[in-house]
Length: 337
Image (cartoon, rainbow, N blue to C red):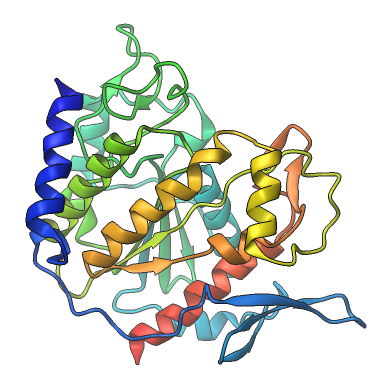
């Protein structure tokens, strides 16, 4: 029944929505630089990499050079950022808060969200499932992270009847190759109202195409119905793992096609499916008038820099994540102007 209903959902979306931004209330798309359109350049003396934007010159890439005060000033409103996504978004959260002078962890979330977690039998048995908030910018701003691998806004289901494990993504999770996703609740309206920026990601944890499209479509519809105009939404594209990640060195691929061919020949953790899911997410969030933090090309071009031979998904060096931080900063400046 779910497959059939999802099929007709997609057909309806394709026929009746077209270019109407999912048939939802939209914000005007902002004209800005395409920060994904570039190539890496290596300084032969220092060995430092610079991301060269086509037609716009060089971007900073050395992780220690991003000015903390400038980044803090670029945060809008009450300077509160919510990051929702998988463990790579958790890595980004860790580096971003560290660089911006994180002062503490604060688990005092809105009571209704915690009640939702209680009702869903949410249990923080895995460290990455624990929601965390840190003060940054000398206490003037905050960043919150919640682990939800699909940015799923549906009702959440416990995996076992004992209710002693985490909360899983929808009722189709934990089956076969779709067996490794975690979804802590995050869509409480009273909780979301306090954030100026939402940074979401999904696509690393495998999910069938129709279900992924359905999940993102419903999440976008929820955000359109819940968020206020001043609240900004970014979707970060996902970077797949690459096998033999510790033997390829730390240079760069000559082109995206070369990087994608290497990834195809050295698969790692559902890497074959990530590009397709990225394309779907780009279309949905762009049509909805939301911003893309498109890190796919620039990060794919970087060889190596992964965590270990046993973990070729997460990053073992700061450079890729620092580059994401730089891209976010520049896009926040675009939003300000």
